[in-house]
Amino acid sequence: MGRFLITAQQVLIGNDASPIHGGAVRVVDGRIAAVGTAAELERSDDETRLDLGTATILPGFIDCHEHLNGHDRFAIGDASVSEPDVMFAFVATFHGRRLLDEGITTARIVGCGPSHVDLQLRRAIAEGYVEGPRLVCAGQPIVMTGGHGHIHGYEVDGAAEATKAARRQLKAGVDLFKVMASGGVGITREGEEPSQPQLTVEEMSAVVAVAHAAGKRVTAHADGERGIGNALEAGVDCIEHGIFLTHAQAVWMAEHNVDLVPTLSTMVGIFERGIEWGMPSSWIPIAEGILGPHRASFQHALDAGVNFGTGTDGFGEVVAEIEQFVSFGMPRYRAIQAATRDAARVIGPLADSYGTLESGKSADLIAVGGDPLDGLDSLRDVRLVMLEGKIVRSRDSEPADPPR
Image (cartoon, rainbow, N blue to C red; front, side, top):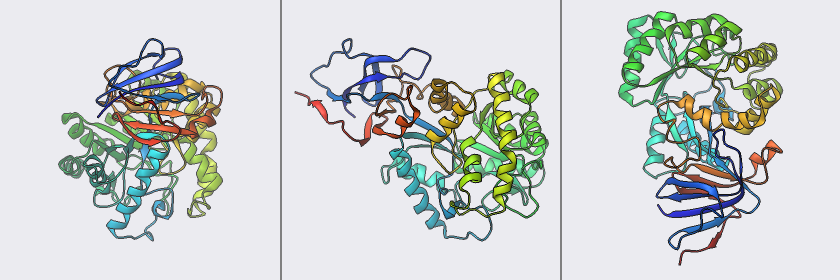
C-alpha cells in the first residue's frame, strides 16, 4: 500500500490531545504508524513525503445516518417513486463517490432502497469495482405493516415476525439492524405523525435479541417520546433523530451507553429547502413544528453526556451537521469529534479501528485548508482524502520529495 509521511501546519488527532502544530502523520501499509511534529518524525528513504503546507490534517469524517439514494428525487418517501432496482444502484454509486469528495471515509447506511442495494454496493467498493467510502450497512429497516419507511422496509406484525425479519437481515449480511419505533417527519402514509409510536417493545426486543446474539448493534428511528421510550425499553443501542427526547430519557441513555444521531441539519434543511429538494409540501409545516422540540432534545442529551454521532439522513452535508451542533451549544472541537471519534463509537465494534489518528489505526484521514478551530467552513475545503492508506482524493498535495 505504500509508506507516507504527511506534513501540515496542524494535526488534529481526534482524541482529547491538543492540536499538533507543524505536525506529521506517518502511514505504513494502510495504518497509522506514528503521529507527532515534523521535526520528530524525520522522513526515511523508503517513504513518500506529502507536504500540505497550511492545511490541517484530521480523521476522515463519518456519516452515521446515510441512505445514498437521497439528495434528489429518489429520496421522496411516497409510493409514487417507483424505479427499477438498478436505478437505485446507479444513484447510490453516484452518491458514494460524492461522499469521498466531501471527506467522508465511513458511512453508516440505515436503509438504501430495495434489494439490499447498500450491501451490494458495499461489496462492489470492497472489490474495487467502484469508488466509495467504507460502508456499514443495515439493509432493510424493520417496520410495522404500513409504518414509517414501509415502502422499502421489511414489514412485520408481532415478535415472531420481527425475529424472522431480523434473521433474514442477518442472513443477507447486514452490519447492524434498524427498527422503526415511531412515525417520521417525512411521512410515508396518510395520517402518519412523528409522535406516533409504531413497533412495539416486544417486536423491537425480538430484533435486539437476534442482533446482540450475533454481536451486532440495533439503532431505532424514534422521533416521538413514546417511540423513544419503547426503543430504550427494548434495549436498542442508538436513537436516530430523537426529536421529542426528554431530559429523563437522555439521562437514561447516558447511563446505559445509548448513542444519539440527531440529524439536526436535515430537519432544518427540510423546513428551509424541502421544496427545493423535491419533497411534498405537506412535510414543511411538520418540519417547522419540530425545530423547537428538537433543539430542546439536543440540549437534554448534551447536558446528560450522551455520545453523539453526525448524520445527514440522505440530505445536506456532514459539515452542516457539525455547524448545527455548534449553533445548538456544542463546543467546536467536540462537534468535530462527533463526526470522527464519537461517530466511530456509534458504529461500535470498529470504534478501535478508526475515528482518531493514533498508532495502529486505519489510515483514514483528510486534510482541509486552514484551521477549522478558527472557522468551520474550512472543513469544506478538502485537499486530501486517504482511506485505509490509499489516496483517493488529492489536491495541492504533490510529493515534496519522491522516494529515492
